[in-house]
Image 1: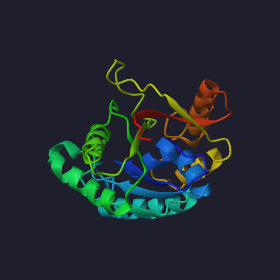
Image 2: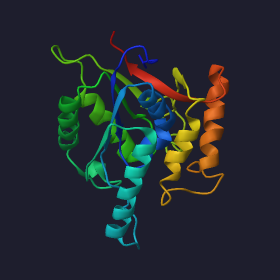
Image 3: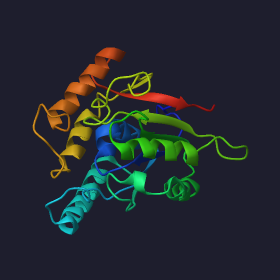
Length: 231
C-alpha cells in the first residue's frame, strides 16, 4: 500500500518519457519524498526524437536539464534516463526494455512501483506498462512489490473509451500539501508545456487534482489503479 510516513519505503517511478513522472504522480512523489521515503526514478526515453523539423540534439540537451530541475523539485533520490527511441518502443524487442527495468529493480529493490496505465493512447506508455509488469512478475524468492498505474494528461484520456482502455482509479492520495510542488516541477519542463485548456498545462494539473479530490473527499488528490499489493 502507499505509505503514510510511518515506516520508510523504497519507491520506484517508471516513466516512458520526461515529464510523464511529473504529470502522472508528481504531487505523490513530493509527498512520499518529504515524508522520508526513498523515491527513485527511471525514464525510458530521452524524448523529442520523434519530432521532425527540429534540432534533436539541442532539444534533448534542453530536456535533460529540465529533467534535472524537475527531479530536484520533487525530491527524487536519483533519476536514471535511458535512450529508447521516443514513440518507437514498438520497434524494440520487449525483452530489451524488460532487462533495463530489471537492472534498476535489482539495484533499487523497491517496495512500491508506479508505472503507466495499460490503456493509454501513447504506444510507449502501454509498452512501459507491460514491460514493468513483466520485470516485476511475482516469482518465488523475489521481493514483494506493490504496483500502481497512474494517469498522464494528454494520453490517458485521449484514447477511445472501452473496458480495456478506460482509467478506473481505486486509490487516491491526498496531495493538498504538495500539489504546488507538482505544478512547480512541471513548470521546469518549459519545452513541454502548453496553454490551457490543453491537458499538459499548469492550470489543468490543478483542475484534474481538484476533480480527483472531489471523488475522494479531499481538496486535491492524485488517482491510481492498484494492480498488485503484497502485504
